[in-house]
Amino acid sequence: MTALWPAALPALAALAGVLLGQFIQGRREEKRWHRERERDEALWSQQRDKDAALWAREDRIRFADYRRDLYADFLATLIRYADLLERASVEIDIEEHRRVDEGETLLDNYGAWLYERGYDDLAPTGKDLDLLTQRVGLVAPAPVERTAASLNYVARSAIEMLIINKKPTLAYDVTQDVFNGIPELHTLMRADLTGHGEPT
Image 1 (tube, rainbow, N blue to C red):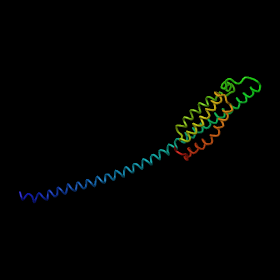
Image 2 (cartoon, rainbow, N blue to C red; image 1 turned 90 degrees about the vertical axis):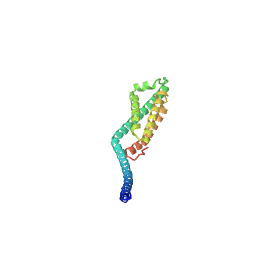
Image 3 (cartoon, rainbow, N blue to C red; image 1 turned 180 degrees about the vertical axis):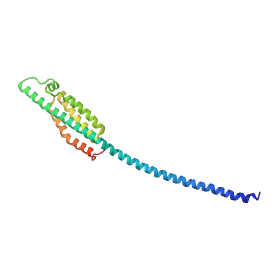
Image 4 (cartoon, one colour; image 1 turned 60 degrees about the horizontal axis):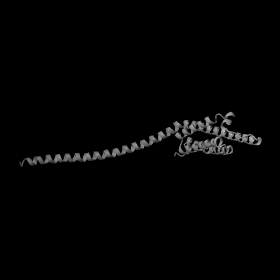
């Protein structure tokens, strides 16, 4: 058996060397694989960020025409509604003063009186304004959405002042608040469309 050991020892040493070499090579491969994985994840992360920025830019460009048309429709409807309310308030106020001066009874139903005078598009315009306000809320940044909703609320409260509360002078004053708020809304909308608005 003694003669077997001198031949077995080099074979065992060679086997141990091969196993140790495989172990070391495996560790190197594992470290390299982890480095490559980290590098790939960093590259993917950078690419995702670039893609997200490109998609945001693409969405902004793609929806710019839609927002521009929507904003123009909203402003036109808001101005039309406020103008109708302003004229209706003035006409009712004049009619009430005329009736007081001539000793006649005051108007019983402002809504019917306005309808008879051609203000039949007041209610549909108000509904259109509500719908456009909801659409603006879906696509506009928060400052535009809040200001548009606020102006719609003020305009809708003016009609309540006029028809329900029968206060044409107060309705006229509230309508002026709508007209005074339009420049701020216009500025916010323009900032959104040019990309200079705050994204919140």
